[in-house]
Image (tube, rainbow, N blue to C red; front, top):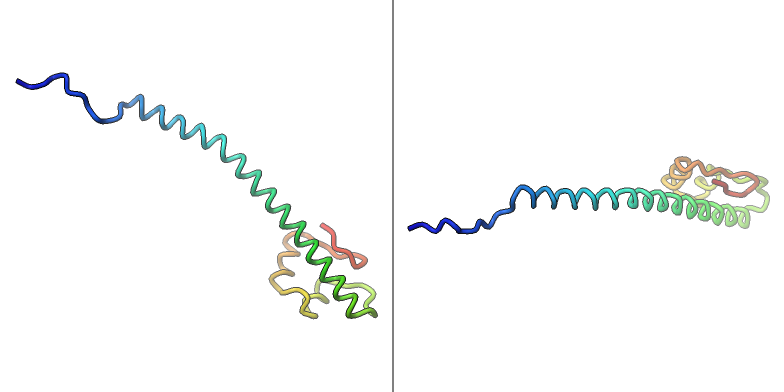
Length: 103
């Protein structure tokens, strides 16, 4: 005689749907927060690059007191900035005016 009341060890369709619903709900809560964190990291990086450029401008002016105005190209040719840093500065739209770096 077979045991008809034997329980299965698998998930039912309802249980699987509930698990998928919970996972999608968590994703909806987490993804916007990750995008906000990414944007904040980009802004922090831009602020750090402005500070780096300003420091390099100050060093250049200290070593070249005859320089009236410093450009990014002056900093690159004087080995104060690498070409990769100069490209990043252009990408971040950092400008130099009156020997001061601005975003």
